Structure formats: C-alpha cells, structure tokens
Amino acid sequence: MSVILFQSTGRHTFFHRLDFRSKAVLMLAVTVAAFVWEDPLAQAGLALAVFLACVLGGVRWAYLRVIFLLMTPLFILLMLTHGFFNVQQVRSLLGGAPLTYLLRFPEDWWLIGGGGLTREGLLYGLNAVLKTLSVVMIVPLVIFTSDVDQVVVGMVRARVPYTLAFIFSATLRFFPLLFAEAQTIIEAQRLRGLAVERLRPWERVQVYARIAVPLILGALVRSQQLEVVLQSRAFSGSPQRTFLHESRLSPVDWAVMALALGGMALAVVLRLTTGFGSFHG
Image (tube, rainbow, N blue to C red; front, side, top):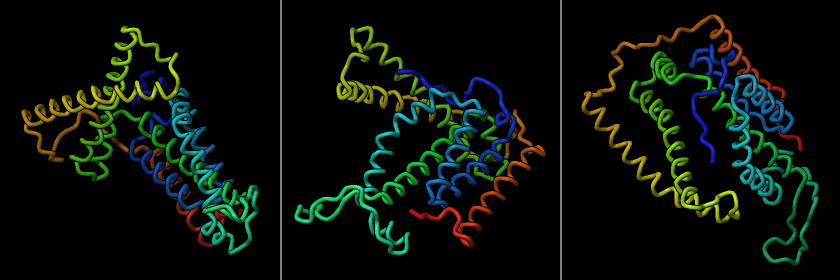
C-alpha cells in the first residue's frame, strides 16, 4: 500500500502558475459540460481532454491508475445497470424508438422475463462512466497543482467565508496524515509476518477493514488536538486578517477564466438550441 501525497505533482507546470480561482472556474466549466452532455462521443472528448490536462499538469500516473482501479467496479456496475434496466429513460431520450437488444431473456422467466441487455442502454451507461471520470479527474488537476496556502487565500479573495476556507485547507492537510498512518499500520503488520501481497482479494479486504479502527481512532485524536490548538489561539474565523501569501489574478488567469466560462456557456447554448451533446443511441 503506497502513500499518495496530496498537493504534489513532482514538477512545475503551467497549471501551477495559475491562481486557484481560475482553476476553480475551469473545474466548474468541466463539471457543467459533463452534466449537460449526454452523447458518449462528446463525453469521450471531454474525458480525454481532462486526462491530457492531468498528464500535462504533472498529476502522477500512479494516482490516476489508483483512480481507474478503484472506480472500475463502479463503472462496470453503471454499464450493466443502464444496459439491462434503464429502458424507459433511454427510450424517452430516443423519442420512443425501439431499442436494439444484444441479449434477451425468455418471456416466461420470473421477474426478468422479456428484459435484456440493450445497445442503447450500454451506450448511455458509457456516457455515465465518462461523465463520472471527467469530474473525478478534474479534481486532482486543480488540487494537486495548488499550494494549500494559495487555496485559502484564493477562496477568501473569492468571498468564501474564512471558516469554510480553513476547513477545506485543513481537510487537504489532514489526508496525507491519514495515508501515512495507514502505511505505518501496514508496515507494523508486515513486521509481524503478514504478507499482504500473498493474500487473496477478500482476505486483503479483511486486513484493510481492520486498519479502519486504529485509523479512525487516530483521526479522532488528531481532530481533538486541532480543536485544542484553535481554542488556545482564540480562532474566530474572522476574514479581517493578513496573509503571508498573496493571490493576484494575472492576465493569463483572466484569459483562462474567460475561455472556461465561454466554453461552458457555449456548451449549454448548443445543447439547448442545436441539440449538440444529446443522446442519439
């Protein structure tokens, strides 16, 4: 079990030079486009663009691979669920057109008789998979290329209440500690003779489930320590404060925000006026 470090990509790229606010607008534009479009081809183009941006932004392939592996069961479930059961919605999107069955159950079968796997349902499931993938990949592109201090200052400059900005930044700092603590527990079990790599998948699940108890207890202890520190320093959450790091929008940031908002508006307008991005089966 490897530790994935947050807020780190290993190299300085174009996305590192952008202000957090411009990257947040970019994330909003990608999310809106992903939810507006229902065409698998359009979703595939968006997911590919986000993936290439992650690669150019320096997001580690190890992290992306973990995302793909962890999300694969969900993706398979989405494909099968839409392929077998999402008949009415897909048919309504196609204007009541008949569906193409790739596999059909006999009519006399109990509960599932007459149903089956449709090509259009699989395509709509693929649309849901690509939609989820785009949204999941854009988050590390924004977070991993932003320093936590810059995130806080950017959120405050964007009129986000300081208390919410502090909670968000504390969460970002908290996750690496959890991963490191989980790694420590695994190493302690290895020293006691546990070879995790030789276990069967369900046995690994049992091992990782046992990690949850000390991990949760450690998280509670750390949160209580953080509470004591904040109370001892009279934390009020007032935005009237000075910052060590400044956050200024450069011309490049304004250009990125303009392109992102323009692309988002164009995606919505084209969908409403021309049907671009609609599901056609």
